[in-house]
Length: 128
Image 1 (spheres, rainbow, N blue to C red):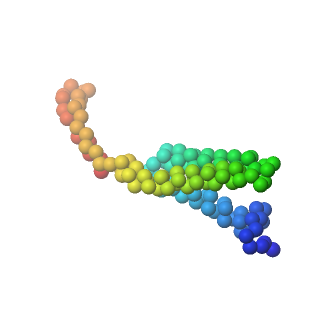
Image 2: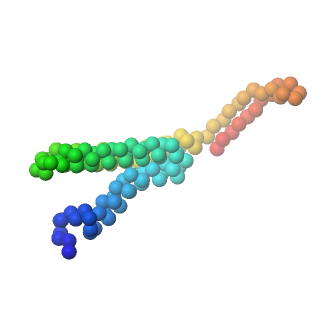
Image 3: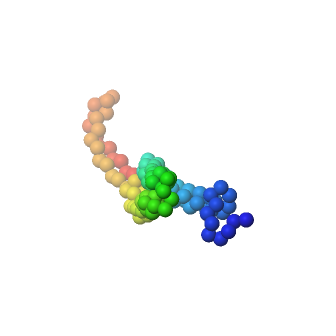
């Protein structure tokens, strides 16, 4: 049986909660990018958040590997988590403007030359 406050990383609700929270932190903002038609931006920012989180956790575990009483490992791990969370907030804050720019209305007026008749004309292109 798991005691309250004990982090049993092999069995118990701590593992499920950690995986669910990290998945939401990494994938959540990218789903908005992908749904808005910004696939490249979604994958790039998903990669940034993943590198920040995994890099911070790896550095934290490496720093505290032989010295469990040192707080440096916890600072590095929490720093990586904070960086990933900050990137997620930044992604969500800039999502609406990015989708708006991606789906912007445009009007183009282009001069044309018909290859068959060699007639000169104007082509209009409207995007909504």
